[in-house]
Image 1 (cartoon, chains in turn green, purple):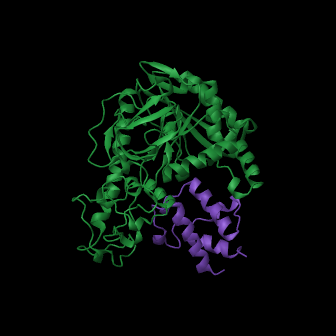
Image 2 (cartoon, one colour):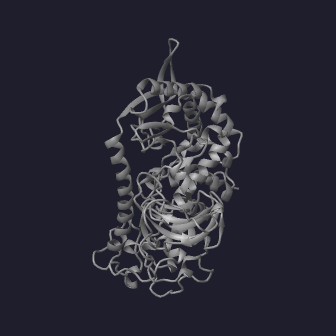
Image 3 (cartoon, chains in turn orange, brown):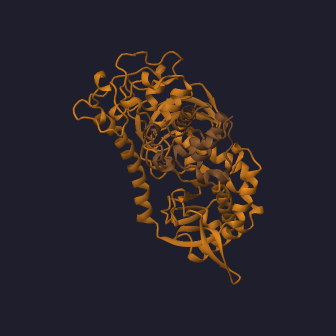
Length: 425
Length: 81
C-alpha cells in the first residue's frame, strides 16, 4: 500500500485491474485504492509480471503493506519484486475466492433488488468515485446496496468487491420512511424520518477527510518553521491579454485566469529552484521537474492537491486542458497515484469567494506554498499617477529551513515580472 | 422555448455539475455560486453546457449579471431561438 501523501495512514483496496500472469509496464494502473480522501488509481513503477495478488478487494491495510508481488523482467522467478516496499504481508485474506478479485463480468452486479438502499428525497449517498464507476458500468445507484457507514455506497460496492451483508450498525430504513420526503431543507417530523441515517455518512466522510488533513497539517505546523511574504500584483496586462484571447474563442476553449497564474509560478520557480522540492533527511532536495500541486476543494468538504506535471513546459492551452482533466477527476474519482505523490510545490487560489490574502500551510515534505486571493479593482499609484487597476495579492509561505526571506523575495519578484509580460507565459 | 423549459434545462445542468448539492432547493433569487458552492471551474462548465444544450454562447463580459436562477432564465429566454 503506497503512501499517497503525508496525510495517508491506510487504504482500502477497492479493485484489482490486473490478475496473476498479467504483464505490466511502468505507469500502468493496476489497482484502485480508496483512502480517507479519495479513490486513487495505483500505478506500478517497474516493468514485470504479476505473480500474486496479496491483498483482497475490500481489505483495509496500513501504508507499507505489500499489495501484490510483481516479478521484474530480470528476476527469472527467483527474486520477488514488491510493488510497495516495507511491512510484512497483510493480514490473511478473508475467506473469499480470488475470482471475486477480478472485475465481475457485466450482469454480475448484486441482483438483489429487494431492500433498496433508501434515499430521502432522491438523494443517494455515494462516494464520488462510486458514482463514476456506477455510471461507467451502467448501474443505477438506487439498485446498489451501500456498505459504508450509514449505508453510503462506496466504490467497493459498485465493483462487487465487498461482501454484500450490511453491517448491523447500519439500520436499514423501512421503505415507509422513504415515502415522499420533501427537499432536504424541510425539517421533517421527528420519528420515522431518514435524517438520522442521512447524517452519519456525511459526517463519516468528513471525519476521514479531516483526519487525513489533520495529520498532514499538524506535522507541517510542528516541523516546518514557516515564513510568509506577500506582494500586490497589478494584473491588468495579464487579464487584458487573456480577455482578448478568450473573446476570440468558443466557450469550451476559454482559459480561466488561474491558468496564467500557475504558469507564472512555474516559470518563477525555474529562477528560484530552492522553493521547488522537498525537505527530507535534514536537507533541501530541489526537484528538477516542476509539478504544481493545485488545491482543489471538494463540495462535500475537504480538499485534494493533485499535481499538474511539468507545468513550466506547457502552453496555457495545455495547462488549461490538464487542469480541467485534473479537477474533473478529483471530483469524480480516477486520480492516479503519481498525481498525488509527485507535486513539488502547492498553489492554492481562494479568490472565488473574495478572499484577499492567503496565509498557507505547507504540505510536507514540500518547502513552499503559493497563495492567490481575489483580483480586485484597487487604487494603484504608478509613475506619480493614480489609477484603478485589477490587483491580486500573491503570498508565499516557505520553509525557513530550506530558504531565507531573500530567496522568497526573489521568487515573488520573478512571479510579478512574468505577470507583467504575459506574452512570455 | 418557455421559461419553465429553460429552467428545467438549467437545473439539469446544475445537477450534473454539482451532484453533491441539491439544485431543487434553489430559490429563484438565491446566489447560485454561493448556495451550491460553485467555483469558477464549475461556472465555466455550466456555460459550456448551456451553449451545448440551448445554443446560447454567453460572453465572459456577461458573467457578472448572471447570479441567480431568475436572472439566468430571463437572460436565456431573450436569446434562445
